[in-house]
Image (cartoon, rainbow, N blue to C red; front, top):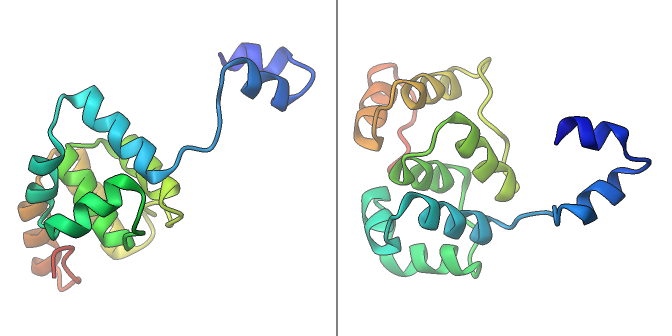
Length: 132
């Protein structure tokens, strides 16, 4: 696809031909649910998010904080690329390795650690945990 993009006369031509547009957080969350074969209720529970608030996020009715998006990413079992895509879709900053807290989170995602273990690592290093 990259080669095709680089050979077209306009990026708009490419994005229209491949139906590529801006994905909302709600759209991407629901796409990940389908791809991973997960249930929304299980993901919201695993993320430690209030059930009503979680459903509103998935429906696009509420905008979560960056930490809530990260909690959902862990609950969905997202890798680094998927996590940063979720953050972008939410209008939040991607994880940045030069930020101490983000570096710990990046390390944990890369090692396949869950939300609880990640919070333990954040706490161990004196950083704010994801789950309040």
